[in-house]
Picture 1: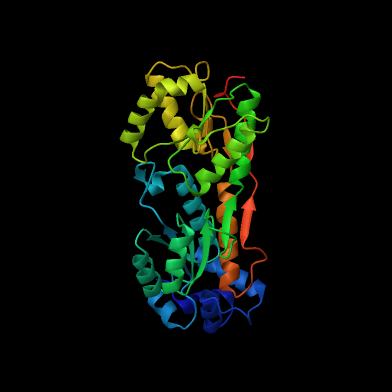
Picture 2: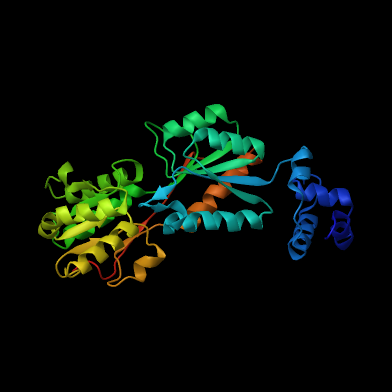
Length: 335
């Protein structure tokens, strides 16, 4: 097993300097030396003893990733393409910076408090919390936090990284309307947060030419798969009459496409389908799914970058960082 002294000799520096780099105490260490030591640490697969790191008085170099939900679309949250890509990107970039990722189940707020305190995590990236849950956590835990896709009741008073969900919904609505689908329906698993803002954009686009888009065109389906498929069966006549469905996620859109296929309903000849996210599966399914692209990797990158700034004591220039989205036209909408 390689020792700290071995790393120091390879780098041509003192053992104390290597220890300072590992523990993030680098104010008096040149960038050249930091890069040299970091490269050797990676090359030698050196893993510091976490107990020693935490007792050193410096940061633990642990970043907590909190998932506020155990299930997405009725399956384990990490099976969801969006969640998997987001967490995977955070893990990869965190390790490149010499930090460690700890995945924390966030449905129970006290669980987050206990784990983050026990392991002395330096900061948290939180997915799946609304403002109320964030407030409860922040009152109990004094850690740097960045939220992802959280909408406030009023103005932003907490740091958040998201995308322009309203714009994405608007682009889908405008596109479907321009193709003659004036009665298209919007389908989501909730009527809150990202789903709601995507609906509002969709609704605004549908009403651009003076035609009213009623709340009844916002279809909320169950989160559990078997209940969701049953709901699709109940709504099938209405779906066929509408001729187009705008789903708030690629997962639900592709699931619905399979449902229609099993019923012998042709896409896009009998019904057009759109999604949201532009996941890896959107271009693999047949017909290829028309959807809204959001850069999930960029979202993860920005969230980690913001958190590292807070950990270093720096201020964020803006609390809500919102990335643009754009429509990707494929084959699931009949032109």
